View 1: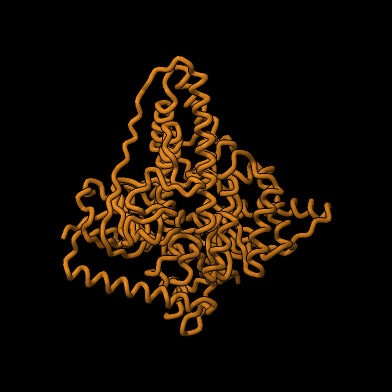
View 2: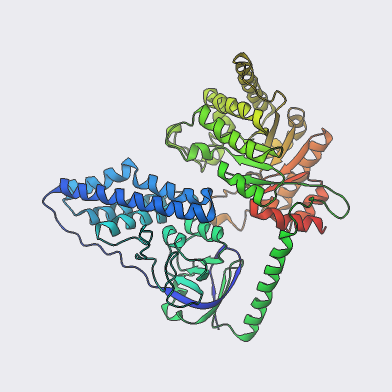
Length: 559
């Protein structure tokens, strides 16, 4: 038995035969050309074909996994249509008089290097995306047909061993796929009936490939590096998507143990299905509201499917991040109203704009900062640029006429910030009254507790608002003075630190002294090892990812 340790990116256990996908050679010949304009025309035609292919792939993914999961391929299409990308390719063709294939590959390498050099791990993961879309253009230029062709043909780099979606398997077996790397488009085209799990030498937990694996419910491990061996093809393997362990040619004891664990996991999943509709209440009668976090209107479907009682955190900044220009009041109103209507009477807590730090938007024209995590972000932008803030507040107020919407202010450090925000909110209310526009006059306002200052001032803040929601990700970062984007600080950024837990306790106690409720919407809310602690502290609400709702309900109901 050979044991390999990788990085877990999608939980679950898979046991089966390994099928190794051979690395694809993307070598492109550099040729000098006489007619740059003709070569540019070739590039543009190939790009348009690639965009059409991505539209087809997007529709396939939407049909199987939902609209929100298909948005990745909308982003890929936008990447291909980005003027900077086209300008780079065409510039190389014009200046160096090289063929379109070579220009596309060179542009991809430049953009990938730029993304890889960024501080944000999310942006670093986009390096794989730009290579994926560029490879697609190169395939078109080289006359390779894509596996998403509408005629049902299954050709392309992902078509190996009959495991591509819509393809016909070479045999009836399902396999664990080993590969150097998998592009998002390759992963989306895998036939789930033929794939048990994924193991790759390269990749990261933030990559779109990892996100797709989680969406497809496939156990997945990345980062096994030099342990990747093509000779493993045909061997039996066990992969543990929770611990990141891979066992090639497992011994009988390991096989027996993982078969037991897999059976237990399947039994547990069946149990969780039975919890839908049941109250989130301990055996002693302590009630906890169990909500879900979302980033886009389309995520509301997952909230309902997983039986969350409401939305505890709608990250409204994604309405800004995924656009190339300011989202209008009408655009935002439609988004918030859609979610409010879909959720019916269930609460929808919408966090106001939280741009800055690791979430940058070009059209905000924010200045470079040496320490953006401590800089111009979130409520600070809203209060110093009230014209932006008021557009959002008007949209939120208008949408409140269609459901149970509440407003939550991020990165609060003082009472004055809350009062200033409430003043702008009152101005928006006054304008809407003058326009005879309906809204909820008694809309609730809360603040995110995610700085030590807000914890210390919690008694005073509680007198100003209707609820608290603790953002444990930033609270851990600021309490322990550890940049959460810096992987080298992982051993020091302990979210279980007594200092962080004491901050949470102080916040809950202050909220209850003033008769308001207090929840948690950060990652710790889903940490089952802390559920007992949060119950003892008297937490009123937990907001987690939709898929974490039922496991958490199970733990609480058995407490």
